[in-house]
Image 1 (cartoon, rainbow, N blue to C red):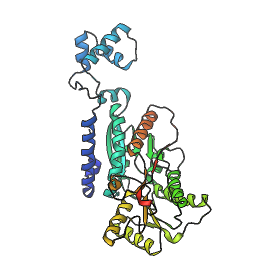
Image 2: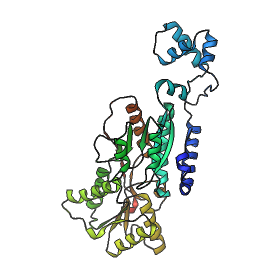
Image 3: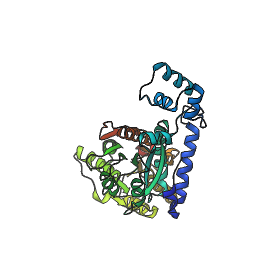
Image 4: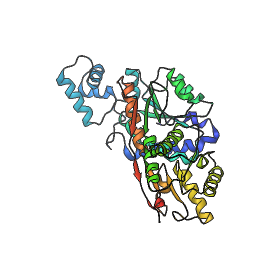
Length: 371
């Protein structure tokens, strides 16, 4: 079950909400929640009790493993429910354990459509882990200066825990969640203390790729990014700068562009970088890189003959480009899997490492080959 009531109340984000909801249903139908085995949704605890001529209490004790019950009786119950593919409903389990069996998936409502594939891939990982534990996802959106949707589902006790899909430098969501009694995990990094976070090591990854470009003799690197309020933007910029420092070189500040999110903003930065003689454009993400490539094609700029280009994030947007683009490859689905696993551990009262950093891969391609 996917609850999108909080989203549908905001008309101009309905298309995003519908796409996310359909995506969840598609993944659920593809993967199933019991190894592809059909569940018996009509069988009840009373049916099991009647079939075995025992009480409902005895059946409940056998399933939960709690309470006094003979081993022979427990084995009979477990064998019967296995043969009949019976699974206790999350609602019944929730009432017994004071849980909702809902996990919140909180995404930024002000994200551009270009960010949707990343959140979808993260969410597929979250959904796989959640479904295996009989949890459903409740989607909510937050906006800059407005986290009322998040507050409502938390205040109404609809969740056992939640995952924030993005972190900000000034993060109102994290500050709010630290003040309430609800386990949560963030995908991304934060300077806030006592927050469980799962992220890729953007600083190390971007430093490594930039270092390779510098060692290839590309001293005039232009960095183009957008979204200066996001932690990931700051992390990628820091990795870029650390690479220069490690090689005792100085960043040309005239070639650092942190722009707005609009295509025109990016195109102006690309044009300015070319005018200032950049040897290689280092784009912070796939959308910026694809926008630069589209402009190159219109203007007759050849890669890598006229200028080289690389991206700090790979995606299907860049995979079929010719020449192939030098990029960093991450695993968004792995972020979702790890975040949900850590959240479920916290819900169960287990200790979890505060910071988990996942790996990356540097893909050196033709777009940065010197001819």
